[in-house]
Length: 479
Image 1 (cartoon, rainbow, N blue to C red):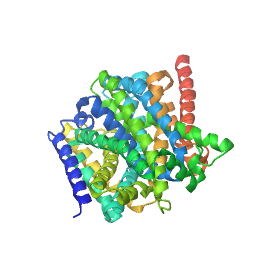
Image 2 (image 1 turned 120 degrees about the vertical axis):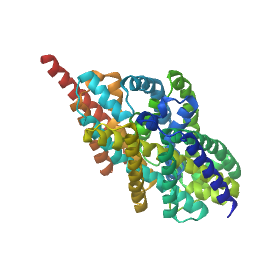
Image 3 (image 1 turned 135 degrees about the vertical axis):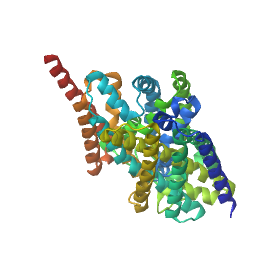
Image 4 (image 1 turned 90 degrees about the vertical axis):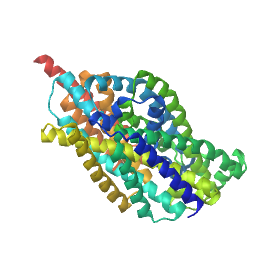
């Protein structure tokens, strides 16, 4: 067994131990299993949110995109930084307080209970449709994380791609199954810290190997003129569309259930106050680091068949075995943190937001947790099966799922917090479905090259909720 594998095994053992230790007490009820009794402070809340947000996409998909597109990829990060800041300042505090007041356990549960509070509608239609959309997008989203893990293992330790993928799925599912949310958030905290360390350290080291910043950019532009532009080679209106789409990509933060879940589990308002600072530092460091690494890889590895192998290949060729093991651990950290968080939210969507309301039975706390654990195994099998098909790139799968979730849930979340009188059952359901449909059609029509699909998707959802909500308000007044 070489040194790279030894380091990786030690890292995985540490993650596994943290997951088991923090989940050792088991879960008393749904709130404990899915939210850890809302007991987390600023550091685990902020860093685990960052790790969950960035996913394996940041090491595999985003670096691969920067490898191909060059500096245009940097346009994503101002949007991400601003959207994350707005999320922490204006969405998080209100969402945390209202979720406690309403007893809401996740974003979909919040939708139903807030609509019930403002309109007195007691049906479960919003919850069931919203939960179905979560599952629809989270299964391919989770599959993309496993794809990233498979590519990393195959590239760096020459383990079969499918075997690495399956191992990743089983490994994460086990500690989620054992300890629920507490296991997830503390392993995410550890893994997010490692990711930040890698992105702060590696770009300067590799740029020094090339000969400094000047030599690096000169070499990049000599390889491909696109590397010297901020538009990815696009011009005119196409360039404007590309930049606007990338800038607005970050607004998808407002509609991601696995990211917003961290606000539900935060201990108090001070957690979010101090967490805002931690999250901003983490976001800027990791996001900028990934684009720089993609451009560096283009200089050092000119002709890769699959750009999404760029970072693993770069590390494998240039770094000693111990460092390679640490980097594999960091990529695994990104994969595991997102996969575990999405897995738990998908399980909650099925067990709590679909099965429970449809069955119309009163379950005990033990039964509810058991249903969740069984559902977790099923979700793991489904996402692994899709990942084994290897049907798309990590970057494409993540962008599609991110945009779909943002279009369906982002406008509804913001409006329920700040304009609840504009939201009723009809406007909420129609807004989710219209936003999703517009985003999907835009993507399938190939229009994403001109503007990211979440922009028209979110605008359409917002407009239809405002329109139908206004009509509903007038009807109520007439009565």
